[in-house]
Image 1: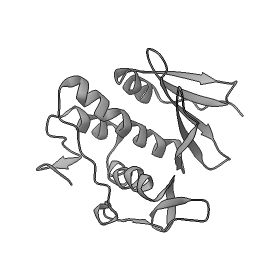
Image 2: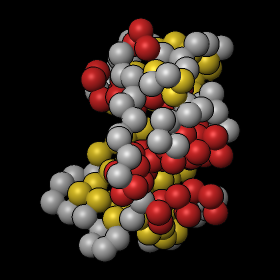
Image 3: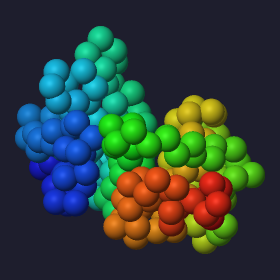
Image 4: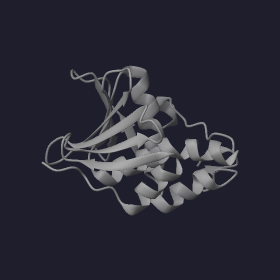
Amino acid sequence: MSALSPSHELTTWANRAGYSVTASDKTNATVFWSDPGGEIRYYCRNEDDEHIRLTRVTRDGPEELVLIAATFAILQRYMIGRFGNVIRDELGLDVLRPPWTADQLAEGYALTDMDDDGCRALLRNGSVVAKAPEATLSLLALVPLSHYMRLSTADLMDSFLDPHGAPLLANGRYA
């Protein structure tokens, strides 16, 4: 299995947030690493033929599951959001505070209870979009992702560059 190839768009976005991107055959992953230093690294791997696994590791910590996405396009939106607030901070803009409670899901999405594997799933039309571990951390990942999925990647990126967060936000609230 070989490392995933991120889009030019995602690579440029990660670079803007201070992350370098490397495809590593050694780890069978695409690695996003904070540059300089590599103190924070995200590993994107094909979990199987249908899922993309995102893990995070800090220099002194263990590798931990962040998200399992149904497609790389879904993972890309998650990563745009993850790097987006880093970019906003660099630009001197206020952080876009994402919604994170179950009642703040974007319309058309649903959450499952925690599964036996310790993950909660984000559903759209009964199909799994993504899964994330841990009761609270899963909400912090999946609820914002439901809103990110409403937009094209270009519009999502524009939202993090816009002083008011548009079109992701309308009147200071997630649209």
